[in-house]
Amino acid sequence: MKKLISALLCIAALFSLSTGTAAADNIMPFDVEAESAVLMDVETGRVLYSKNAAAPLPPASVTKVMTILLVMEEIDGGRLSYTDTVTVSAYAASMGGSQVFLREGEQMSVQDMLKSVVIASANDGAVALAEHIGGSEEAFVKRMNERAAELCMKNTCFENVTGLDDDTVDHKTSAEDIAIMSRQLIKYHPDVLKFSSTWMDSIRNGEFTLTNTNRLVRFYKGTTGLKTGSTAKAGFCISASAERNGLHLIAVIMGSETRDKRNEAAKKLLDHGFASYAVCSYEGGVGERVRVVGGEVGEISTRINSFRGLCAKGEAENYEIICDYPEKIIAPIKKGDVIGFARIVSDGGEIGRVDIVADEEAAALSFGSILYRLFCAFVLKG
Image (cartoon, rainbow, N blue to C red):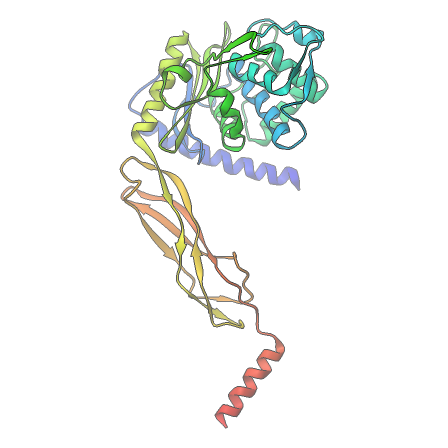
């Protein structure tokens, strides 16, 4: 049953993404210098731009978005603490590429290790954390692929936790899948943003400086993260997140020729998103009273739920709420039961829907209540 539910959720998510992608492709007037690209809204998961979004490509260190996601899930799930101590193995210390030069047997807190991975893309730190959580890198990678499947990342195969690809066979993911796991990390584990939005920090009591590999953190307004990567196979990649006026976006770039072209492509997507879209919100409110059949009360009050979604720039304040109430509802009704829906509509069409719910209970008539009412009716009639 769990697998069936997961499959159905994946189908629904993929349908949603494919619909958003198709719409985005039809309206985009520009290209970006990259093999693949996606712009996604964090709140809704709506795809605002796509280019070869499903193409499986080597992601380099953007792989670590999934590594970080699993670490944050352990922390937020209470199974791991920022203050826990990680002991570095010889294998972890042997990692090349971006590193913080961990030594075999060195001990470091989870927080400092995580900072090293998020800010400085430390390969040695990523492996040390993976071994601490999973027992081995192989076991942790298995969980990475399982989590990717749970998130409906259909074009992803991880072979390590770092993205180093000199010895990999099919270590690939897609821009679409990177956006999905990036959104999962940002939306449900926002604590990570205090690391990913930091330009410079330090570990080892200030003796070792960490500088963010994501230059957008310093040079692009509103940047919140998230992860860069580059190898000879992958080219230059990034999952860049930024937030302005409550609108949080993710721009994924894969396969750029240079770091500067990658960064410019990400900024181009983010600029487009902030210029074209805004957050549309409705705080909710009191609905109409609805007639109840077969209840202890003849009618109940209702409430329209709050809404937060995405709309075209200029529509954020110009919308109307169109409510669809049933003519009657049948008791019993519990407070919070969904009894109808409201559409949020602007000049551009329907922005979204929210539930209309019962704001009080309506118990069903008991046998005694029915007899009493019949008695009262008979006496009054008499």
